[in-house]
Image (cartoon, rainbow, N blue to C red):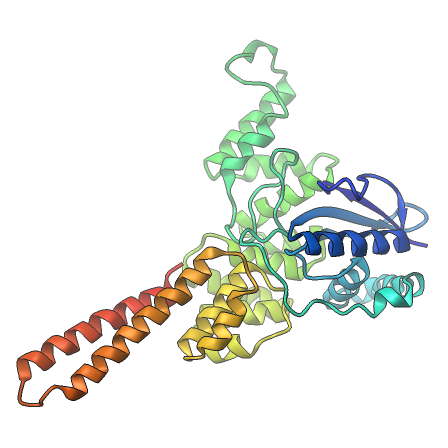
Length: 366
């Protein structure tokens, strides 16, 4: 039998830290997801799945309401676990977990299909953490944000105001955090590796590993290549460095998400446009919109724009349409201008070139 505990769910309709059976958790997530969807709201919280011996089997984040992708916990766990590639010796546990959720989930909740029109938060709520309450920092859409380590440092005491009260152990942590803020993560990684960590500290260590280029170590902590690949794609790296790291990771741990993100980096618009079965984050939806714009499929671009609440995507579509209309108007004007009027034609052609540059800027600007 499986059990579930939720943490950091801001909605009181699900009790944090309460030990629920899996079926209770499925029903609770289904009901809250439906309620939030009807209210036009969204929230997210972490969950952990245990067996009867309290052995941790799986952990993740569930997003309710308009920002969510799955109608209940059953669908998310089934989808994500199936896509996790495991070593042969661990495959039996994966199969057992999948069998168990099938046994424990009522058929009514299995028949609910994954929503076909998810509204994805521009901050990627399925990965977003609440820094006021947790150590983990950074989001998949923005990469590693070391400034949030100041929040983590508040676990201790203000160094300047209470310097005489700081113990040697606390001082070591404060120094490590300060070094991490300067881009030197080694000391903080060392401290975290040598202690018994909470889940939040594990998540922090994952991001630190990625910042240091230790992708394999990050994966070993999560057993979730989709999560690691998504975080890799969100790192603030040069285009070539990001391409090389994603290619290396994809070669060892291939995922549909990895193939999609590589196609985006390579500007393979046809592949991006035709890809449908990936975990849709706001950046991926934006890339999908851009691909359709590049291919001239405005209607499809508009359709995908409706699946995110990121206002910058809608702005790009609007600007693209305005500039495209201007270019069409200039081309019409050019056709009507006499070939003998060289000066007028040159001015129109220059104006078209200027608009085309702006069009490319819209397509390829962050």
